[in-house]
Image (cartoon, rainbow, N blue to C red; front, side, top):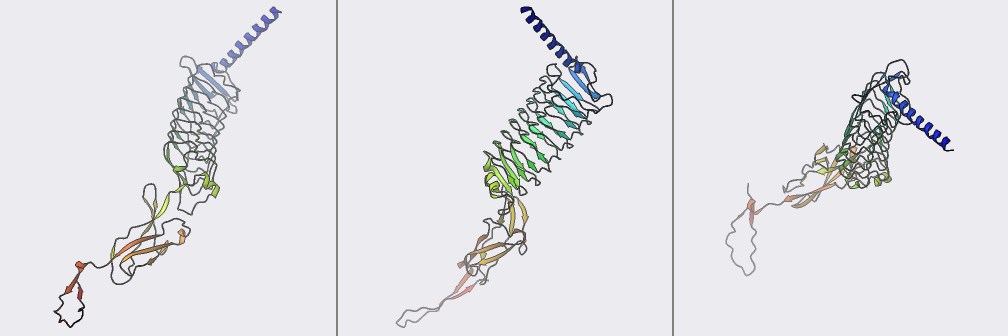
Length: 398
């Protein structure tokens, strides 16, 4: 019985050693793997180069786990002819520090570099069009990444849990930011968003607690899903364009007091539920009526020129100067005498739906002061047994 047990243990040990040598051989030797892909490993520099050297489909194996996981490779270059990288190729390679992907590669399958906790430098070629899922998740030494504009599709969690990641430049041609893209990137301070963005999925930037500044979402955006910016507590403001129709629950969890809707009151496209989910945001723009200087009373109706503009409420800058008769009309009240008069504004044309509070302005009509008048001397009067009330002769000075 003991002899049989020892034999089983010996066989098991041999199998483990053989498996380890097989995994090592897959990249140490210049062995054709599949699709004409060949791996070159240089132990003295702990570097690897992967090329297509023979005809084939140009894709690497789909591994259950990385064959390079425990073999010390620090630098990897994906070179000519490698069109697709199969999932888990470098997953959990704790020693991998630098990766360069050439322009021939178009596709990274799921979890290719997930868990490469020493990875700091990533250079991506201009041929990449798609990441599938969790491509760089948990790459905790990565501090910045610039995604090529050729990239049109990304997968969930592609950059999640990268706790040292500070800056991200997304491809300008992305239209959807996927679920959890940068979730828990607790050092992230800046992200450059695509100009053509239409949807931000659930938890895309959830718990990016150091993301700061004033984020202005692009005017193409239509949907912001639940927890998209939840707990981004260092943000100063987020400006939501009027193109947004749907906002998910808790999309701006813990920062609802910093949300601005980039339109005038009365012009939001989103429904009431979405508006409430956005925290009943403040309006970025509003009307402003220019102050009217005091005016001297002239004896008739006083109708000063009333100037109305649209202003940015965050910085006070004028967005547009409106035109009387085209954008608004003015009605004057109590303007026939000295005192406080009012100019009421009625918005018309493109601004007929304005629903804000900037609808009137008061101004002062000044009467004549004593310094502007002269009183002629009153001649001596003869007392006739009753009160004498001569009429003064008052003249306005020219």
